[in-house]
Image (cartoon, rainbow, N blue to C red):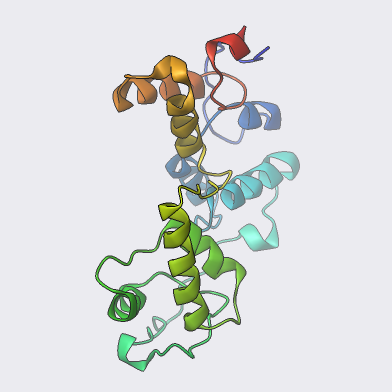
Length: 202
């Protein structure tokens, strides 16, 4: 049975317990605001930001990795699209810049975009080449045509919930607004944010 209840959602500050923090859903902007006030890094995936906060709530200290870093005196020079080639190596700090979009659009076509699946591939494959990125992009497109679903990362709870909502035959004919309303109801409660059909919730 779902352990969620209608307990009031607590305020996210240094007084919140780790248990309450883990039991409620938080928007990424809320997590970033907490970090900003505490002088912690606000960048990274939602799960990474949450881990910094949990460490702080447990110890009252900022981990070395959580501390904000001052911006360099001179902005990092971006690599121009014209200087890229299929032999260019994926860097460990790869960013989906406009220059990278220009390059891949030139190679693949105007429909190219950095999907979540492609971004995950780039993060996990530093050292490979842009040719590998192009090959993986086409593989993802082929999988789509075959009806194969991409895996949604755990941090994207909203997307996972909405997909599961529409997979439930009981919601056939319902609108996206209905799904969003159901999501808002679940995320306001204590517990996980997993979609459950009426029979599972009993």
